[in-house]
Length: 220
Figure: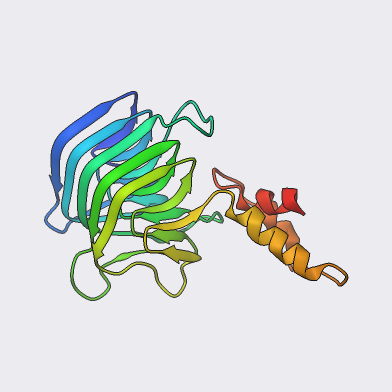
C-alpha cells in the first residue's frame, strides 16, 4: 500500500474548493496518511468539499477529508491549514499495523496548526460502518489535534470508536499536551509512595509525529 493516498496524495500551499467525492461504497485504501481528498496536506486551504458514500482505510493517520494536515510554521499561534464548509458521509478506519498510536477522524486523522470550521460528519448506515481504529485516538471530527481550532463542527449521526480504540471522543480523540497533564496527575497521586511503570522502555519505542511516550518521559 502507498503512503499519502487520496485524490491528491500530497499538497503544499494549495487551495482546493468546490469538489464532490463519491466512490459508491468503494474503499480508498493506503498506508500512512490516507484521506478521501488529500493524504498529506501542508499549508493547504480546503473549502466547500463533500465526501459521500465513501470508505477510507489506512494506517496511523486516516481522515474522511485528509489524513494529516499541518503547516511549515509550527508556532503555537500559527494556523497555516484551513478546512471549512465540508461535509462527510463515510466510514473511516485503520488497522494500525505500526507500533505508534495514530489518529482517525471523520474530517482529519491529525490536524496541526489548522482551523476546522463548519464541518458536518455522518457515518454510513449499517453494522460495522463507523469511524474506528485499533489502539488509536478516534474522534468524530479529528483523531489528534495539536495547535488547532475547531468551530461549528458536528458529528450529526453514526458511531465512533471500538472496544480496542485507545481513546475516543465525540469531536476529538486526543490532543498533544494531554499526556503531560495525565502523567503529572499520576505522579502527584504517588507522592510519598511508589510509582511503578510497567514496560517503561515502550514509552520511547517507535516514536513518530505523536511523541506521547516522550511527553510522559519528559514530565517524569
